[in-house]
Image (cartoon, each protein chain N blue to C red):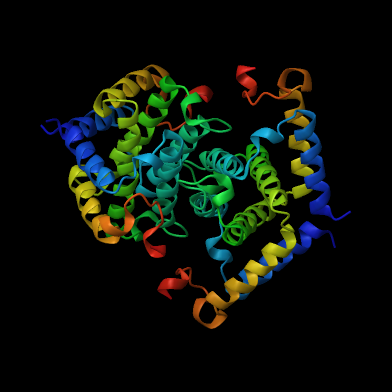
Length: 109
Length: 109
Length: 109
Length: 109
């Protein structure tokens, strides 16, 4: 089994044992990712990046991934595939020549 | 190479070709995930879950994953490992008997 | 004194008594609003709107307002003025004839 | 009329002319605040605070306020009152002696 599939299967097992599929519609899953990423961001609030605590980042980032994988599963997205596709699109929006060393958004390049 | 490692390598290649590592400190990566997940959430705004457009969800979710993987890479987190660890912790916070069919948060169970 | 100015003065007094101005740069204030709005959103997660607890919504929304007012203060924005200006702009993007009863985003109208 | 009430009345007028009340349930309003604050945060992404563009911050912050006021209106919250109440609670969580010059979260003080 592919690694991302293994992750998803572990998440589904946890969810199904608790009969939580009923709550996991795509809209609430998108909300859940938002909530978790807010908790992740809080770890950096009023701080320099290096002051944030790695152990907590690990936990909050894991929550972000968990709900992101569950949302991907809802639509049968292959995570590797969609990320590689997006990289390809972004390569067109951000040609190396124009964007090298430059964080300007593509619509302002 | 493991699948999550392949995803990360593709992201790093894209980033390094553009010399963007200088912008990718963990705090801004956490902000980036937040920004992308806001765009994902917008697809569901004022709508029922099934009305959101799958093609756009795919793109925005890919962006969320991209920055989440890049943040994981900053700390050398193994994505599968941290998600499985979190599932284990959550299994303690949400014992099946208490939480079956019940979306109540653990601290209110 | 205008009401929004009174709110801001109360917030500044609280902040300055704790010598927290040093942390309140605009970027971290924007992060703070995000963190608080994530906590607000969590109150609705896996729920219908009417199931969320009003008392908690009051608290989390107050936090959102607090940091939003503090950010406005950083730039000397008059809150009433900027909201009225935005309504005016939105009235152009969303002419009544086209958008009545229709939640479609302006760029798709 | 109080200033916050004037702001709310202007927002309601704009909304009702477009017959948008049907979309404005509290859950979607909370989502809308999230979406707007994500756009606000994006203005600071990969940047130092002073590099963000004031004119755009004004617009995005206005959107955050707009939906926050509309959510307050749903519950008949008086914005000034709830912010002052929250300051009072926070004064207990963050006594001046302990928190002066210190951004540590109250549960870690």
